[in-house]
Length: 298
Image (cartoon, rainbow, N blue to C red; front, side):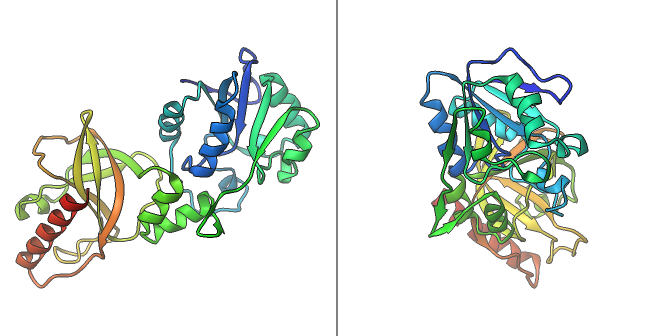
């Protein structure tokens, strides 16, 4: 897949034979996937047009900067689905004030797709006045209906809430893939090593949505290998309370030096809340139970 970054001043013109999918696609959840799969059924090359920054944050509808997926994460998922081009535009004050007609004339008509795919709630242009119906006056438009989870409409926003609440199982069901975050391994206080469970402190390389404090199980990806793991999100209530939560990853059956390396983690399920223990011995016994449970479930 080719990634093409551009702004209003240099919209590419070399990609006319495309089925173009429009949206922010945070999480690339099942609704997004259904839309893209519809486009993939055509004989055209499939392209996705998205923004590098959440539009809702820039226009003030969203205070939280955190998102489910970075551009790199989206690229990985979209490439795996068979998307050929990923167009990325910055969402800033300039693009925010472009009218719906100007967005069509200055961006979409220049890209010149054969047809367009979007969700029924897709909006574009200044004050979000552009709709799929308006778009259909200028292009062949295929509109995907919103999907539901347990009879409720789900969206990237609802999935973000599930993750904030620690409901990884529901979030993954809506995403259609495990929730993933990534970052670089940094040196910590080595508390895990002294307990017999060396952990990797994760310094996130993107403003990901972070699950609520607790212990989770999942998979860690390091040096192109996959390992079962425990993931702790919390403030060390037993070993000395921290001011802010940190993410620590215990890769099971792994003992390499990985400081400074990139580590990706997939959350599969929540094991328990973050607990305060009377002493380190009780904590160690609980971690052994967590590990045994994770090995059985993963």
